[in-house]
Image (tube, rainbow, N blue to C red):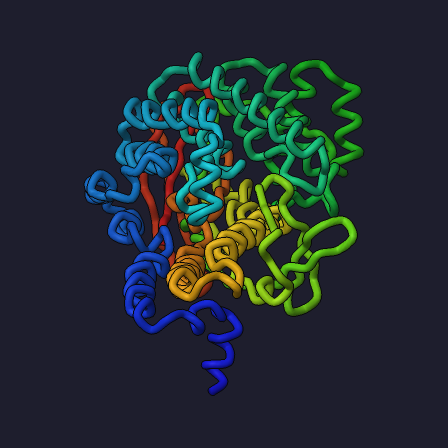
Length: 487
């Protein structure tokens, strides 16, 4: 009986529908149900399984077989995954081909009328995916590494300059607020390293300074889960000194509580290792229940705890046919990030002469979860307004009680179908670039001239180790290396 009362409360129109329409309604509901329960991750699990196993060649094949990623609305995700997978396969030219296409897509994609209508009448999964802000930053990370590995230092510097433009866009979007993701210090550190590798010490200092100030201006000097890396402190002081900016050396010595120490450069230059640990969080769906209420300033939504969400003014809405009883019990689906805890906790980079513990430089887990929380009210308003539009359309079709009996039965049948359509078409947008790492650590270690044997020791919470061996040539310049542990 309780279940019937709940069903009646949620779908009153369906309960009133004539019996001859119920079969059609239930059949339609079952069709919708089969396609509405799975998340984006679950729909392309074969691809993600291959990635987790480190089988990038198989992942590349699975990527091409995925019908979901071939859809126009998922074009950006396809390009990002192709860029990531071909990077892992050391196909750096091909990787940058796809990342350049992703860059171009992001610049040109717009929310046209058809796209907005699909989001309103169906759900946001039907709209074109436009990417998270931190995902756009990560495109530059992989593109810059690709260029460096290909020996294209000029193109890498161009990518470094584009990091500045990307940060300016973030700055403009959030009006330089320190409590929003208005800049990305990791990208500035990468930019500084690229400039330094090209012996552009002036621009390297500016980039390191921008990164350091992002931390210093943040609450508790922590930016989205990251404390300022010690390596960054050393880099900003050293490049300030190399430029002869003695005032800046003094200023940062006070700000960083660190005395600048002169060290002789290693003959072989230095190795910068980026350790990409684990995999980015996936999005899941969570359901909330709201009612629509009209106040003195217009419509707003109220949840079961009395929290208010404003109506999205950008959604076209006609409430002429609605009554108070029609506006209760909206079920709305929102996305939430589910972290995937990485196996390894620490990485140590070791050569014959030195050993350095890698420092965390970018926490994509934290960025993803925090930025989604920050825009929750805006997204909740849009999702709820979308449901109100569906309800209004349903009431228009249902019509008035004094309509003739034949038309009334037909209208109630269609209205019941819309009830169920609204229920099962309601779906959170669970898409995101899920082969990004959970976090990125980095370390800078001196090299001797000629061949250097390097070990990366990865250690889990129980002290169990995994070792990655490789060799690099000490050339007197900065050498880059990135390693992904996907467990």
